[in-house]
Amino acid sequence: MNQLLYNAVMKLPSGLQFAVVLVLVGCARESTVIGKWQLQKGASDPNSVGQDPNLAKRLYQSATYPYEFKADGTFSGPIGNSGTYTVSSHTVTMISTSLKVGAVITKLDNVRQTADLSGDGKTLTAHSIQIKGFFYGTEDVPLERVDSFR
Image (cartoon, rainbow, N blue to C red):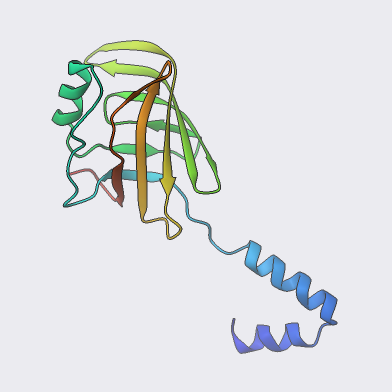
C-alpha cells in the first residue's frame, strides 16, 4: 500500500479502517482459469485412459492436452469435447455437452470433469473424466497456462 493511501486510512476511525482494509483485500486480483492451458512441459502423459481405446488414441494424438476456458463460461477440451464450466473457490467443474470428431458433432449427456486451480493461478490439475459413473483416466494431468498451443 503506498504511503499516501496508508496515511489516509490511518486517519479514519478504527471501525472504518477495518472496513477499508476488507474492501482492499476483496478487490485483490483472484486467480482465474480463463485462457489457454496445456500439459506442463516435462509432465508425462497419463498411462491409463479407461477402457475406451478410441479415447486413448485421441488423447495421445493430442499430447499437449489443450484446454481453453472463455470468459462466457464455455470451454473446449483435449478430445474435441466442449461445454460449460463453473469455478468454486479453486475447483473448476467442466460439463461437456458435445464432442466433435472431424466434422461430426455428438451431443453428450453432461459428462463431468473437475480440475484444481493453484492459488497462484499458474497450474491447473485436471482429474479423470466421469461418464455415467465411470472414470476415464487414473492420473491427474498437470496443465500450465500458455499464450498459444504448441
